[in-house]
Length: 114
Length: 112
Image 1 (cartoon, helix red, strand yellow):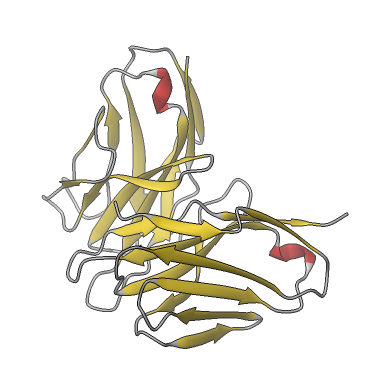
Image 2: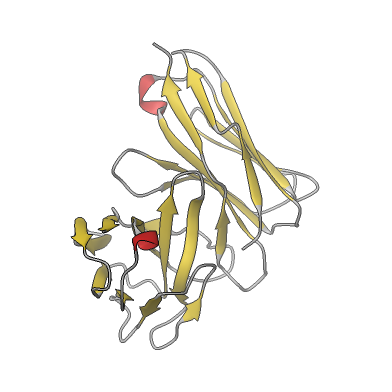
């Protein structure tokens, strides 16, 4: 079982360009999440989706958009990248249900915006 | 998000030592989770705590959900080299809202 896959593994992007970070899970989990990880700040939630067809804003949503057309995929788009979006991005999923807060994380995408 | 204060920020371990780290919050949490992140990988869940006062072990790891619901600690007993990594606490604040707030992490390194 692959679990959660993310692509690309890493990317260098020129400021002002757009980019989509891909996330796919094969566990049929209902909820999915995008985080960014920055040194000294831990993981901060960007956007989330509790079920296919719904999305919500997290702690740091500005400059990012998401869609959830189906259960398995949850792409994150940067419409016009800025250097402050340089970070490591993690996608996560959660099965769902009460007392089921375990989130499973992908391997991450390291993005550098120049 | 809810503010979680995790300490220490970093620590050095010697093989065989017991180590401890903790998280505190100004708000009450309904769930506490502890994750470990190895270099170049995503975080992996170590222990999940769902009730105030709960003490749970996973091998050499022990974690407790504080009685006040505003803190949690993680202990690692008899540490080994593969314990190095970044440990994160995470808390769920709102019932029915399964978003997690993460601490800034504790970086564990082997003492030379």
